[in-house]
Length: 375
Image 1 (tube, helix red, strand yellow):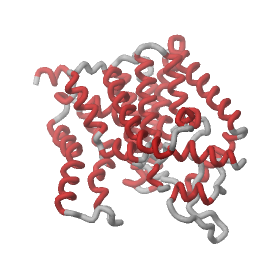
Image 2 (cartoon, one colour):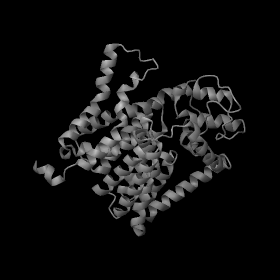
Image 3 (cartoon, one colour):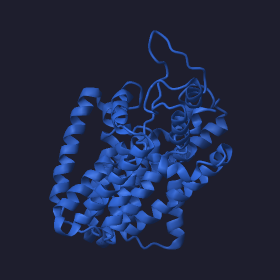
Image 4 (tube, rainbow, N blue to C red):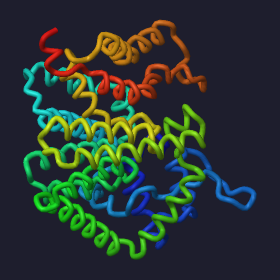
């Protein structure tokens, strides 16, 4: 097996193999068989330490999400998973459009959904069979339920989203602030989240007693070998990036508290949530492009409000959107050896690093609605 098989299989198959052997999946000392499944080459210890360390990077209750496919053949699951995840992404897009109250034509709705599905970020998630795409859909479902005042179910859906905690932590902070802002009417969101999370943690304890202690120890160890760099650290350096990220998150929390009285079906709610998602994309360790499934909501806001965007913003967005296709055509025409170790094959997805910043600027640069209608 190869590393490209992706994260969809490593949580379930890795856990099942290790539990059969009576070992914790959070331990770094895994078998050679499992290591080859992750890295595709022989892994040998050297200098008294583990080489190519790999731990279970998910809460153990993720196995309940994957349990329905546990008995499906690996080759079958490997072939079907991208199709299932593509449908999941399309559902997420439709849910976000419903949250925004964007009543477009059916043709435009499908065009927008397929445009997002064909983006390099989502394509990478499909190729890697990434669970983050499911989390993105569950987050959209939770907000859709929130808008319709099904707060108990919305909180339960949020609890399931914690299978990828680094993705959900900032949006979750906004939901908690929003619930506290009118606790008398919104307490059911907190109850649904707390109850759902307690149920998941408890069920995980039945599967693997004491898993939470090993999980948190694994998170500390993950910093030694995992991709924990943020976009801010990449742009500003490690120390400055951490400082700016801290300031940014503090400002977001303060801004969120100011707007915590807004209704869930208001424009204000969607914009604040988009800001928290964009903050997560640049301030949290979400460097792999597939994590930009979080940006679907702010992207849709800008597409819906296209007439309110400044001229420079429309041009910049058009360049960013068309870049992958233009560069891909050039690479195909020039017959560049795409299997080389050079970074040239990564050019089509190069602008993914700038998309969060561009979306922030576009949201800030939108003209007032009355001005846009009169122009």
